[in-house]
Image (cartoon, rainbow, N blue to C red; front, side, top):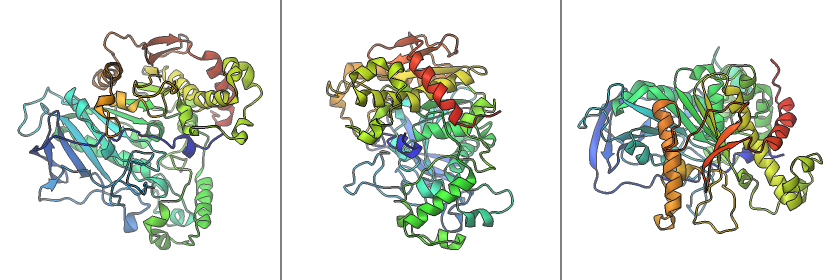
Length: 513
């Protein structure tokens, strides 16, 4: 109905990188590449703009990430670094991924929010083993967004080391070309450069997070939209095994039609031609000005390159190859916000299958606009999340959620939680876009509940949510946790509709064993 880049196009509405009270005391930590000087804020010791790989420029554009060059002089780490190249709003406001400000190809850096009582210099010693670690992979269609947007102070307040990362985006992050394939060294991974960056960042965490008081043996990867999709790809990638212990996927789908290297090459060659770019050799490709690559609106995301990824996350799930780790996965009630504000075009409405009207009787009675949006939400996020949870439940436990809460600041006409709305509640942080004067007691209540679930999961591998019991998912019981105006466990939630979506979709995913 709508291709995956459009589906995941809205990610990260949070833009939480706003910042700490002044003045702040400097805090120095020594990592494997050199000393970094962050700041001790009210809730956390914060370190920003830490390189986890060398700048991917020149010969390293469209190459696997390489080690960062060491330094000896203490490196300032109090201010956010640039975002990776991406389309930005001309008026300086945050784009669909929440980013604004400077961009640079030299963007492979991360940010650390450490508990103030963590095992760091000038701080009290932490418990043996260190604090749990949560590594956030931002959304934005793998085309927009940045790690610095998200402020992790409240995770640090609650005893978690939060890490937010950048990774190459758009045509710089997910790109294949016959000339690059031919020139690659024997065994060299090509194409999925953004995914390689994520793995490089996770390896950095393994080497360095103990210096910030974190436990490298207790790492939870979590992300939203394209970030959630990327986490599912990591779960299907053997090269990422052992780099994390738990995973959380927020509105990341789960049903992915396969794209081969040959198909990706053909698509990207056509994309360059459409933009009038005639480069055909590796040197010519790497000489293309970044300003010409950023506008290219391709289908960006993990694909089967034959080396790093040999199957989609859907195929890995069906074949029993997905990493067996505790998993939280879920979706929002209004994922159809990705379709735009409406009204939907006659062309989109004409694509409604006739059979859907019998399955979606209530929505069909409300009109085609309501019906099309319900089908989209169930097909793209709800049904696929339930399918992943069901498949994962045969190993380590999986928990399924549904986020339906609509903030009190919204008008009564908004009745469903849009794509990415849950982020503020997970982080318990309202960011630059939501003045605190607009946050109600009920908003705080829902945020405290959801944030507590995520923190407990990072600490123990089980999402204990205050007084709310959240049972692990099994197909037989078919239970999920709804985070809404009245939160609680729901049984057989939209079972008829999700069963129908699954029956229609699975045959299209090349899931042969």
